[in-house]
Image (cartoon, rainbow, N blue to C red):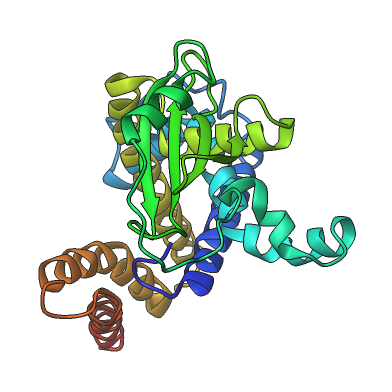
Length: 291
């Protein structure tokens, strides 16, 4: 969410994109009454346009649970920042820090005086004792070497979709709180489980590979859906050459812009390179459409 735009704008763009994707998925299912009946009838012997439509419809159905989960959770995470103020106003007397507290954990007051870190292995052992059979997943240190250090130890819960428990310590070896993603309120467990589902952080390598395949399918469905719609507009005598050019420039230009930004990242800011390349792709597309 923050790779190509500032955090606030990036999360807003991602959230709106997720909401738009969810709306397109639901409208696509509702507009095709035979979509489930024809789920396993793949016909590839027609014209290229018909083959594209067949693949679009079949991949839409085969990956529907994945498509819905990814779009819904993406919309929720991306737009969550817009919900903080209303939630804080209604339930916490306007205190936004209390809304974020269950997610980011308790804070340790900053204190720059030097102080050695406690025994991290001992802290990890104590954290693993929180959940039977837990394993160490993550250990993070903020402001190391000072009295204001905060040490986060995250342990995974075997057999549970929520990722695990966060245990927080200060520089004096004292536990200052926990992020109860497994043993806490239902809302916090649901938030953690949604993150696991969105990113595929469960089930090991088979699930990761399945997410790669299903993600590629969702990419094709999204791109081909708009292409098919534009083609049907043209068949009805309402062509939109500039809109088609803009869509094709974004579909093929954005991945190339990301690749270019990655290659140039050692010497140039990623957002500047990405948006410059994306704008150049749009300019080229519109120039060709105007011929």
